[in-house]
Image 1 (cartoon, rainbow over the protein chains, first blue to last red):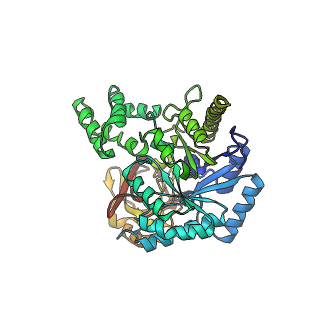
Image 2: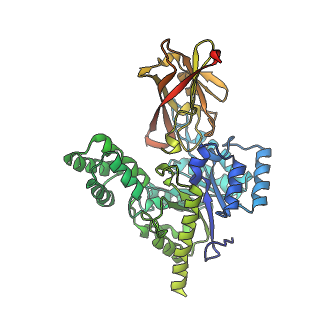
Image 3: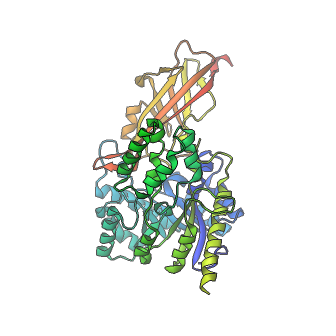
Length: 343
Length: 136
């Protein structure tokens, strides 16, 4: 793997096209146009996609589409890294898919990943043990690796993930691994998000109260929401204003950075989550010094897909391509400091 | 407003010669979903809701009432495509209307219990010009 962007040849730069959600939904780009823009702006070469976002015929792909994709990434010097699958257990209106149906739906997504030249498929926490067990042999046969995404509010040490780690130990397959998403281990809530809560009517003095509660209150996401709600109501906040903060508990997690070291050998891909950058180019809510230290400490070999998720709150004037470039510059600087400190 | 909060996909409400209105409706999520994950669609004009039984939703060229979508789980509503929602025009519709369109989606991979998944209702309200095709 070669990346001209990062100071370690084992760590490749790239992005997930999910970062470009607003541009994509606006219909301004089709897949070819967006790939050309990625290449022109040199924010690859690694390209990750969410299958159900980027591909019209997903979970399947026809030969003509696959051939066009292959020719295009080759022409542009891009490298397919990871395909985001979805475990749509609640697809039907009348009942959940059973393990056999869910496996079949996931297997179609794996075959599409293989056809498009991806080596890794992101799977989600909704995949039951039974589904993971059933789908692993096909991944092995196709030479694909399956990475369960560790996204807020989960982390390497949360209950549901400990169960997955036990299952992985039992199955002992080289095809199984994890994909850290640094939303799981954040140090603060993105500033723009906090500002929008105040604009939605949350008294400003309650913002630090929320952050403290988010960091330290015990229990589940819902427990933490209720404990903040109790305090906020005492301070005269409206239910609507309190409700506006709830999404943050699902989107942003406060698991310890140290916990990533528990699964160091199983990290097969990384989502470089980011939201916004300050005047110095730093990410106020995600600690990229700690992330760079982690990646160097564990001798990570793989891709970091820049995943800019500020699109869910950013004003239309913010250009996602610029934010992606800013993230890659930040990670490059952070890695450089780690490397030079160790010479 | 982020792209996943936009529901109304056109800048006008078009009314055909027979008095049937149509409005483009976007999928307010970051990825494609099956039509079966649509749990509800509502349209309100100038504060008056259009009765459910008068709404027809067209996705991938196939139109039907909202209930008919529930069986379409082996199909994909591509995230860049708009649905077309049709309904008979109220008699007193003027040249502009305050239109409010809501769509409730079941997010099929975010499970909240042994037989339940997250639902998300997105509503957008806009003043739209009414374009009458028979007057052009």
